[in-house]
Amino acid sequence: MFLIYGRRKLRVKTHIENQQACTACKTFDLTIRVYREYFHIFYIPFFPTGIITSCIRCNSCGNPIRIDSLQKRYETQTKRPIYLYSGLIVIAGAILFLVNVNLNKQKEKRRFVDNPRAGDVYIIREEKNNSTEYYFLRISKIQNDTIFTYHSNLVYNGFVNKLNEEDYFVKEQELLFTRSELKKMLDNDIINTVERDYGDAKGFNRIK
Image (cartoon, rainbow, N blue to C red; front, side):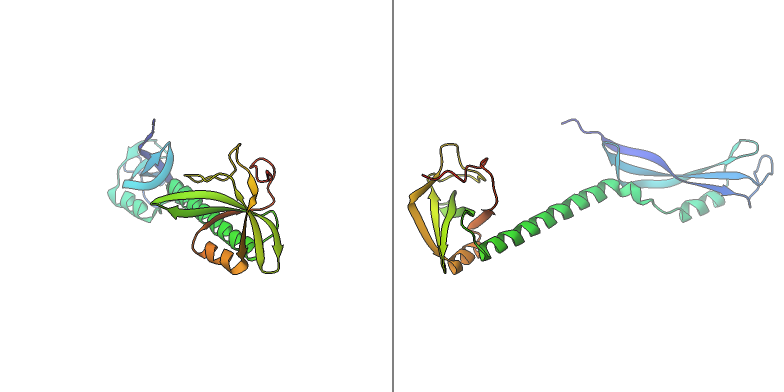
Protein backbone atom coordinates (compact mmCIF):
# COMPACT_ATOMS: atom_id res chain seq x y z
CA MET A 1 0.00 0.00 0.00
CA PHE A 2 1.35 3.42 -0.98
CA LEU A 3 1.31 5.61 2.10
CA ILE A 4 2.54 9.18 2.34
CA TYR A 5 3.49 10.23 5.85
CA GLY A 6 6.18 12.13 7.65
CA ARG A 7 6.90 15.51 9.16
CA ARG A 8 6.25 18.96 7.76
CA LYS A 9 6.69 22.48 9.06
CA LEU A 10 3.84 24.98 9.13
CA ARG A 11 3.66 28.65 9.99
CA VAL A 12 1.10 28.73 12.77
CA LYS A 13 1.17 32.41 13.75
CA THR A 14 2.43 35.79 12.55
CA HIS A 15 3.03 38.59 15.06
CA ILE A 16 3.79 42.27 14.57
CA GLU A 17 6.21 43.77 17.10
CA ASN A 18 6.40 47.56 17.50
CA GLN A 19 8.13 47.73 20.89
CA GLN A 20 11.48 46.22 19.87
CA ALA A 21 13.88 48.01 17.53
CA CYS A 22 15.53 46.38 14.53
CA THR A 23 19.21 45.70 15.29
CA ALA A 24 20.13 46.84 11.77
CA CYS A 25 18.08 50.00 11.03
CA LYS A 26 16.70 50.73 14.53
CA THR A 27 13.08 51.06 13.36
CA PHE A 28 10.22 49.60 15.45
CA ASP A 29 8.48 47.48 12.84
CA LEU A 30 9.21 43.78 13.12
CA THR A 31 7.36 40.69 11.96
CA ILE A 32 7.77 37.46 13.94
CA ARG A 33 6.67 34.25 12.24
CA VAL A 34 6.24 31.18 14.43
CA TYR A 35 6.58 27.69 12.93
CA ARG A 36 5.62 24.27 14.23
CA GLU A 37 6.49 20.79 12.98
CA TYR A 38 3.69 18.26 12.74
CA PHE A 39 3.25 14.62 11.79
CA HIS A 40 1.01 14.00 8.78
CA ILE A 41 -0.52 11.11 6.83
CA PHE A 42 -1.50 11.92 3.26
CA TYR A 43 -0.72 15.54 4.21
CA ILE A 44 -3.45 15.56 6.87
CA PRO A 45 -2.02 16.89 10.17
CA PHE A 46 -2.32 14.42 13.06
CA PHE A 47 -0.40 16.05 15.90
CA PRO A 48 2.41 18.56 16.54
CA THR A 49 5.90 17.14 16.92
CA GLY A 50 9.42 18.44 17.31
CA ILE A 51 10.18 21.92 18.56
CA ILE A 52 8.60 25.28 17.87
CA THR A 53 10.75 27.81 15.99
CA SER A 54 10.47 31.39 14.83
CA CYS A 55 12.13 34.00 12.66
CA ILE A 56 12.18 37.80 12.71
CA ARG A 57 12.27 40.14 9.74
CA CYS A 58 12.30 43.91 9.75
CA ASN A 59 9.49 45.39 7.66
CA SER A 60 11.51 48.55 7.09
CA CYS A 61 14.89 47.33 5.90
CA GLY A 62 13.84 43.78 5.08
CA ASN A 63 16.73 42.18 6.93
CA PRO A 64 16.29 38.95 8.89
CA ILE A 65 17.46 39.48 12.46
CA ARG A 66 17.85 37.39 15.57
CA ILE A 67 16.72 38.45 19.04
CA ASP A 68 16.65 35.32 21.19
CA SER A 69 14.62 36.75 24.05
CA LEU A 70 11.95 38.14 21.71
CA GLN A 71 11.72 34.92 19.72
CA LYS A 72 11.50 32.84 22.89
CA ARG A 73 8.68 35.01 24.20
CA TYR A 74 6.57 34.64 21.06
CA GLU A 75 7.33 30.93 20.73
CA THR A 76 6.15 30.40 24.31
CA GLN A 77 2.93 32.40 24.01
CA THR A 78 1.89 30.91 20.67
CA LYS A 79 -0.63 28.12 21.26
CA ARG A 80 -0.86 24.93 19.25
CA PRO A 81 -3.66 25.40 16.69
CA ILE A 82 -6.40 22.80 16.88
CA TYR A 83 -6.16 22.04 13.14
CA LEU A 84 -2.81 20.36 13.74
CA TYR A 85 -4.85 17.55 15.32
CA SER A 86 -7.20 17.23 12.31
CA GLY A 87 -6.40 13.56 11.63
CA LEU A 88 -6.96 12.52 15.24
CA ILE A 89 -10.18 14.55 15.39
CA VAL A 90 -11.50 12.86 12.23
CA ILE A 91 -10.64 9.39 13.58
CA ALA A 92 -12.21 10.14 16.97
CA GLY A 93 -15.31 11.49 15.22
CA ALA A 94 -15.57 8.37 13.05
CA ILE A 95 -15.23 6.11 16.10
CA LEU A 96 -17.91 8.05 17.99
CA PHE A 97 -20.17 7.90 14.94
CA LEU A 98 -19.76 4.12 14.61
CA VAL A 99 -20.33 3.63 18.33
CA ASN A 100 -23.49 5.73 18.14
CA VAL A 101 -24.72 3.81 15.08
CA ASN A 102 -24.12 0.51 16.88
CA LEU A 103 -25.93 1.70 20.02
CA ASN A 104 -28.91 2.82 17.94
CA LYS A 105 -28.90 -0.55 16.14
CA GLN A 106 -28.92 -2.38 19.47
CA LYS A 107 -31.78 -0.23 20.75
CA GLU A 108 -33.73 -0.81 17.55
CA LYS A 109 -33.12 -4.56 17.74
CA ARG A 110 -34.45 -4.71 21.30
CA ARG A 111 -37.45 -2.59 20.37
CA PHE A 112 -38.28 -4.96 17.50
CA VAL A 113 -37.99 -8.03 19.74
CA ASP A 114 -40.08 -6.41 22.47
CA ASN A 115 -42.75 -5.56 19.88
CA PRO A 116 -42.61 -8.28 17.20
CA ARG A 117 -44.56 -8.08 13.93
CA ALA A 118 -45.51 -10.65 11.35
CA GLY A 119 -42.86 -10.54 8.63
CA ASP A 120 -39.95 -9.71 10.94
CA VAL A 121 -36.84 -11.72 10.10
CA TYR A 122 -34.34 -12.79 12.74
CA ILE A 123 -30.76 -13.70 11.87
CA ILE A 124 -29.93 -16.41 14.39
CA ARG A 125 -26.41 -17.23 15.53
CA GLU A 126 -25.71 -20.48 17.36
CA GLU A 127 -22.55 -22.19 18.56
CA LYS A 128 -22.48 -25.87 17.58
CA ASN A 129 -19.58 -28.31 17.66
CA ASN A 130 -16.98 -25.57 18.11
CA SER A 131 -18.31 -23.66 15.11
CA THR A 132 -20.79 -20.84 14.55
CA GLU A 133 -23.89 -21.38 12.44
CA TYR A 134 -26.33 -18.82 11.10
CA TYR A 135 -29.86 -19.22 9.86
CA PHE A 136 -33.01 -17.14 9.47
CA LEU A 137 -36.38 -17.14 11.20
CA ARG A 138 -39.33 -15.26 9.71
CA ILE A 139 -42.35 -14.46 11.88
CA SER A 140 -45.43 -15.87 10.16
CA LYS A 141 -48.05 -14.87 12.75
CA ILE A 142 -48.50 -13.85 16.36
CA GLN A 143 -51.19 -15.22 18.65
CA ASN A 144 -51.22 -13.70 22.12
CA ASP A 145 -47.90 -14.71 23.70
CA THR A 146 -46.94 -17.19 20.98
CA ILE A 147 -44.73 -16.26 18.03
CA PHE A 148 -44.95 -18.55 14.98
CA THR A 149 -41.87 -18.55 12.72
CA TYR A 150 -40.65 -20.17 9.51
CA HIS A 151 -37.11 -21.57 9.44
CA SER A 152 -34.84 -20.91 6.46
CA ASN A 153 -34.07 -23.95 4.34
CA LEU A 154 -30.31 -23.46 4.60
CA VAL A 155 -27.89 -23.07 7.49
CA TYR A 156 -24.79 -20.93 6.92
CA ASN A 157 -21.25 -21.34 8.26
CA GLY A 158 -20.56 -17.60 8.28
CA PHE A 159 -22.44 -14.39 8.89
CA VAL A 160 -25.02 -13.51 6.26
CA ASN A 161 -27.57 -10.71 6.05
CA LYS A 162 -29.67 -12.07 3.19
CA LEU A 163 -30.88 -15.40 1.88
CA ASN A 164 -28.81 -17.33 -0.61
CA GLU A 165 -30.40 -17.25 -4.07
CA GLU A 166 -31.43 -20.89 -3.57
CA ASP A 167 -32.64 -20.39 -0.01
CA TYR A 168 -36.20 -19.75 1.18
CA PHE A 169 -38.40 -20.08 4.26
CA VAL A 170 -40.06 -23.46 4.74
CA LYS A 171 -43.67 -23.54 5.89
CA GLU A 172 -43.33 -27.10 7.19
CA GLN A 173 -40.51 -26.02 9.52
CA GLU A 174 -42.66 -23.80 11.70
CA LEU A 175 -41.14 -23.09 15.09
CA LEU A 176 -42.98 -21.60 18.07
CA PHE A 177 -41.54 -19.22 20.65
CA THR A 178 -42.93 -17.22 23.52
CA ARG A 179 -42.15 -13.53 23.82
CA SER A 180 -39.99 -14.20 26.86
CA GLU A 181 -38.03 -16.86 24.94
CA LEU A 182 -37.25 -14.38 22.19
CA LYS A 183 -36.09 -11.79 24.73
CA LYS A 184 -33.86 -14.40 26.35
CA MET A 185 -32.40 -15.29 22.94
CA LEU A 186 -31.66 -11.60 22.40
CA ASP A 187 -29.98 -11.29 25.81
CA ASN A 188 -27.84 -14.33 25.01
CA ASP A 189 -26.81 -12.84 21.62
CA ILE A 190 -28.52 -15.68 19.76
CA ILE A 191 -30.61 -13.15 17.85
CA ASN A 192 -27.91 -11.37 15.90
CA THR A 193 -30.02 -9.00 13.82
CA VAL A 194 -33.67 -8.15 13.26
CA GLU A 195 -34.84 -7.06 9.80
CA ARG A 196 -38.08 -5.12 9.30
CA ASP A 197 -39.55 -3.13 6.42
CA TYR A 198 -37.22 -4.77 3.91
CA GLY A 199 -37.68 -5.13 0.15
CA ASP A 200 -37.20 -8.09 -2.15
CA ALA A 201 -33.42 -7.76 -2.51
CA LYS A 202 -32.63 -9.89 0.55
CA GLY A 203 -35.00 -12.69 -0.43
CA PHE A 204 -36.98 -12.61 2.81
CA ASN A 205 -40.28 -12.85 0.93
CA ARG A 206 -39.48 -16.29 -0.52
CA ILE A 207 -41.69 -18.82 1.28
CA LYS A 208 -42.39 -22.36 0.07
